[in-house]
Image (cartoon, rainbow, N blue to C red; front, side):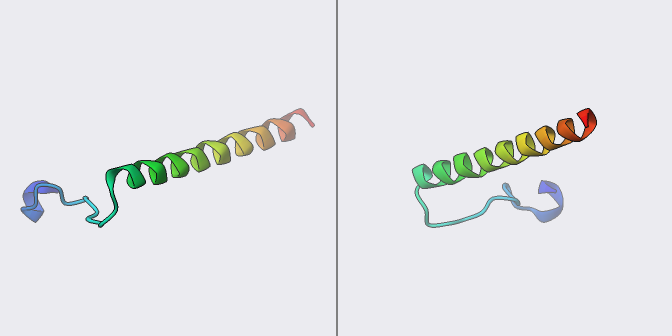
Length: 50
């Protein structure tokens, strides 16, 4: 991808946000993903037991 595009970081998202804000957003998104996976696994386990 780097060779084809000629850009050092082709997937980088350039924003005006500070690094701290980006880290908080990443933490929130990561927490939401983990929470969703936990709920999905718990629901699947309940269906198997029933």
